[in-house]
Length: 443
Ligand code: BGC
Picture 1: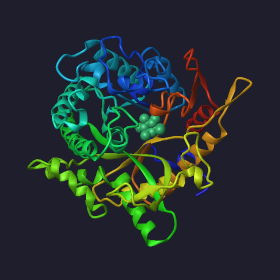
Picture 2 (picture 1 turned 60 degrees about the horizontal axis):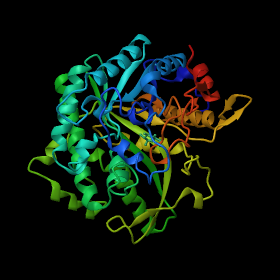
Picture 3 (picture 1 turned 180 degrees about the vertical axis):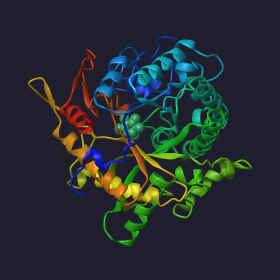
C-alpha cells in the first residue's frame, strides 16, 4: 500500500483535530469558572513548567481556531468541557456564562460545517471534588452523573460524545505516580480511583443514551504497542503484563470481560472497592472506541513495582528515533493496536481520536518547517489505510493537535500543533504540516 490518496478513504470518513479545555482555554479564574485540579497543581511554587492560566487563550480565540480548522478542510472539531467552568464547585450551582461559552463554541463549529465532538472529561476535575477525595471517592459516580446529565440535556445539538479521555493516563499518572494532578501516589489511591473511573465510563454512556438516544457514543483509550526486550520468556511475560495494564485495563470491563486479572493476578485487590452489582454496572455498549496512540513500549522483567514485575526500557537507551518528549517515534505500532482492539467482538467501530508528534519545530525565515510531522502524519495514514484494507471499521482520524498548547507536566515546550503558537502574543502561524494537510484534504 504505497499511496495514501484521500480518495482511498471512505467517503464519510471523519477528519478532525482534537484539543482539550485545560490545555487551551485559559481564562482559568474568570467568567465564573471554579478551580480545577490542574489549576491547583500547576500554580504551586514547586511546579516549574508554567501553567494553563492563559494557555492558548482559546476562550477568546475560539473563532479564529475553528475557522482555521475549517480552512484545513476538516469536518470535525474535538474539544472537551471544563467541568468547573459549568459547575464551579463540581456540583450544585451552575455558571451560566460557562454554559453560554460552550454553546458559542458549538454554534461556531456548526456554522463552519464542522461536527462538534465533545469529550466530557479530559482530566480537569473540579478542585472542590478533589478536596473530598476526587476519583478515590465513590461519590464521584453521582457527581459525574449529574454533570453528564446536565451537559447532555443542555447541548442537545451535539451528536458525537466521548465520556472519558484516556483513563489509564489520568488515573495512572495522577493517582499512582503523582506526576499529574492531583499528584497522588500508590495503589491505595490507584485502585479505588481506577474502579470509579470504570464505573463512570459506563454510567456516563448510559446517561448520554437516555438523554440523547440518537447520539453516537464513545470513550477514548491511550494505547502503546508493547514488545519484549528479547524473546526470553520472563521478558515476554513482562510485556504481556504491561500490555494488559496499558491497553486492556479499562476497555475490558466495559465489554463485560472484567479487569485483566489472569495476566496480572495482583490486580484482584481492586475488588476491595466493589459493591454488589458492579460487574454489570461496568458494562456499556459503546458505539465506538477512540484509540489514541503516540509511542511504543519495550518491556523487560523487573522485581519492582510489585504486582507488575515489569518495567519499560526508555527510548533514550534503545538508540531509536524519538519525539521531543523522548518517546519513540513508531507510527507502525498504531496498526498493531488497531488490530488488537479489533479482536474484541463488541468493538463496533474505531475512531483514531488522537495521533500526533511533538517536535522542536524549526523556524526558517518566518516559516515553520516541520517535515518530520508531515512524515509522521503520512505514515499514520498509511497504516490506517492498511487497517481499513484488512476490514477494520475505522471511521475517522483526529490529529493532535490544531494549535501548540499546554502539555500538562511538560509545560509549553512540546509542540504538537499543526499551527504554531507564540505563547507570549498568541499569534498563530500555520506550519508546513498544516499546509500539507490542507492540500491533502482538498477536493
Ligand atoms: C492526551 C493529550 C496530550 C497528548 C500528548 C494524550 O495522552 O490526551 O491531552 O496532550 O496525549 O501527550
